[in-house]
Image 1 (cartoon, rainbow, N blue to C red):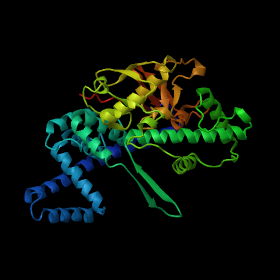
Image 2: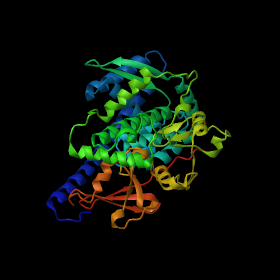
Image 3: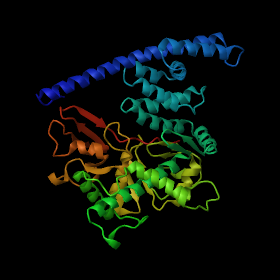
Image 4: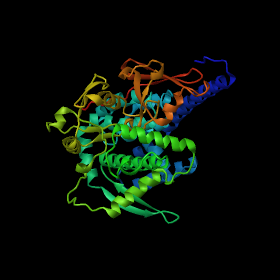
Amino acid sequence: MITTADPYLVRSDEIVDRCREIDRQVASLEAEKSALLGERVQLLLDEVRPGADGFESAERSMVAEVSAALHVSRAAASRALSTGWSLNDRFPATRAALAAGDISLRHAAVIVAGAAAIDIADHDAHARYEGIVVPYATAETAPRTEAFAKSATASVAPETVSERHRRARAERHVRVADADDGMAWLEVLMPSPLAHATYDRITAMARQIRMTRAAQDCGAFHGSLAPKPGQELTEQDWQRLSSFEDIVDDLQEPLSDPRSLDEIRADIVADLLLASDTDLLREAGVDGIRATVQVTIAASTLIGADDRPAELDGHGPIDAELARTLAATAGLWDRLFLDPRGMVTRTDTYAPTERMRRLLRARDQHCRFPGCRMPARNCDMDHNHDYAKGGRTEVCNLCCLCEGHHALKHPDLDARWRWTVTQRPGGVIVWTSPSGRVYIDTPPPRVQFV
């Protein structure tokens, strides 16, 4: 593991090893605690049937006792009791993984919560669900597991998930809530693909504004050379603007527009809502999507032969009707070829000049540093073996990395801080820390809906 005698790196490695061992011990104790809390719930159920007279009072008393004894809120006590009982009742593989220290309590909680759409009495479906999600959870973070669990549930209970999505769409709304210092929250609940597409479009507009201002500050644009508001930028435009943004950031001098990206996003939303008209007299908004939305849908569902859920990459299942609407308005499709494990092996596209980028985005879905969930569309295409040192521009030497994790392998970094990256067959990315510790990141599989 350790490839250096540098005392700094040696001690760092010892600390990480000890912390991992502590985490395993904590998980084992959390498993014991969850089992006891589950037993406490079962004591109540054996004493008083749900719905019977006195059940609510007895349940309230149980939650209050656990809350007081463990010094946690009533809501936290209720969640812990529910998770513990569920693990005892129908999640044996999750309970065993927690007891072995292979996953954390947070993993166990998201696995239990992710199965909410599965009929509580359908133990076969729960077993199939655990067979998909538990092996994934042992190698991934809880947030990644949470997104994957939603798709795993849809694969074993597709009708139930689709019906829940249809009902949830009827709950879309807009709310406003006052905050401190003259501010307020504007909350919009809408279907997930629309929300992510909206955020992506706002982000792209904000970046264009910020980078154009940076270029103008550098004296790079004059008159007609400056991109017009709302103008579609080419790849070359983005590269040129990004370079000017980096120059201004490096100079650490104030821009003529000092707003952060978040501030510009907020201003764009307010301006669009207050200064624009709409003739949208029906539901949806799907027709207005111009941002990149990556959705995986089976061919049979696409043609309407069935209503199996589709998957919004990196976020979970969406209902088939909405996925078909998105597909009908898409300007470009990719056909993905999957192996039996659900891994992307290759892709067809009608844009051959983009084939490599689109395959990598489809394969990786997010930044390939272990645990990172930055969407692939917001990541750099990194040469694992540096192009300047002979690395080829081909899929087996490329992966998606966010800006922060891309910087970890920069050749100008001191060797004590610099990470290295190699790629194995199948898109498996191997990260090696400065001390020589190895971390493996496997391409996220797609759940295949049946």
